[in-house]
Image (cartoon, rainbow, N blue to C red; front, top):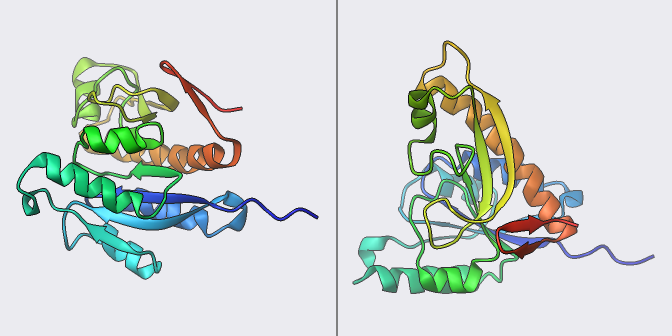
Length: 206
């Protein structure tokens, strides 16, 4: 009998409540999922996401941008701290800082982010509001590998969420979050178990 493959190593970056982090922590409790969260990083102290990591016994670190003389030095420090945990995947789970060239050089082909619109429509921080303002009938969430642009990286997966007649920004955002969370857990598991290749803008999972 062959030994099972070692679990993939996930480093998760957070800036707030950590609900996506919690979904990953719950999923990785199953040995069959194929991954474990080895560290959680944040850009601020005192957030619920760090508390979730602590309760799960996961190491944490904080790299605040104001703690460094320049944004470039922050980017170098974040790259070093994430790299110390030898991640197979780095996951932005509501991480509100744009990483720089050092981070992307180290992790650009394995740094995942999730966005609350069907990219390339409605990039930026107000996806659901912009979708409502435009009057679309279908919104959703996109999981993608991060590049140097704003929500422009190669797409791994997308999930559609219908826009209901009575939706406001809050109700649509909450329904997208639920779909986004399910997609994140499903696709991270798929990537770590099956592998992936990135060719231009196309992400292929065998």
